[in-house]
Length: 103
Image 1 (cartoon, rainbow, N blue to C red):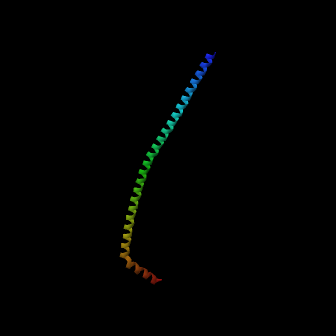
Image 2: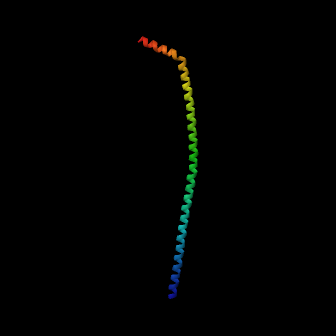
């Protein structure tokens, strides 16, 4: 009977060790999965950050080009208006003076 009890205790101890090894292996696998998950997430974030930065640079270039184009249009309009003023200045002054006299 003692032999049976010793065998049962030995089997129980062996099973406990197997369960503990399985538990440890499960924890190791979970830790590895978490590391891999973080690695994949970081890679994903880095990849999209590169895309975001490229898109941001492209938009900034478009904004700069639009600003330059608007500045050129403004300068052309200002030059045209200035030329028109210089050309019609005396005529406009005469018209204003005539209208003021009429009143």
